Length: 107
Length: 243
Image (cartoon, each protein chain N blue to C red):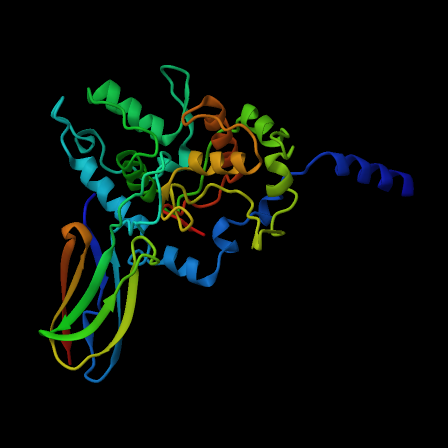
């Protein structure tokens, strides 16, 4: 399975403006509670943490748990303070690690 | 006068009527605001992951022949709005998944993808998305209509009893949709993934406690074609999001 992520960040914002950030990560979020038809447990395979940094400073962090849906959509707001780079990092079970970046210009 | 009105009532009471064209509503219109928002925004619609995977597959060369879908096909807009369709050569009715597999076998010297496999769903939805907004236009299937109206299963229900006669009434707290296949393959929240129209039909059949047809069965394809005809003129929404 490929490891895709889609992030939506406005290209440009005014200084002091509250902007909406939206992220979608491709992940099955296998809970670890399900069983196969033969009764064997399907091992847990989920995203554990999501972190967003804004020019290196952490601005959003989230812990994910087995009850969260597949392909989790995470949306949050952010105060646009300076131009620069937003970095998004998802990490989880079985070495899952995905990084996406987006540029924003603050005027 | 009164007698003829009574007669009319008797006649219409026994014949299950089709939904008038102007009253047809996509499943989209029965959904919550939040689920609609997921479908409306490609950046929030998880079905887009399958579209992106499908695009990669469309460009991938098959090791057996060195050919890729993109060597023959470029713009496939409108194709999904015309399926299921009858294959001219074999005379066999095929849905889009079967057409893809037939093309792989006959022209690419490649193996068919299994039904509901990630590969087949991805290619199908990649093609279907190109028809977004295109009105559905397929031939009517009489065999499909017969199946649609036939009572079956332990609950002795027909498709028409829910989707023609009782749409917008509640089933387990949610409104019954009219059963238009305009958004397939859909990302269904209940499935936590993308699935085909046949998967949905098999779901419905097991809900009626009827014996399901296997994937690819001619009966399911006929039913698909009838449902698409029933939704003629409605716009393709793939990949739809459904609860």
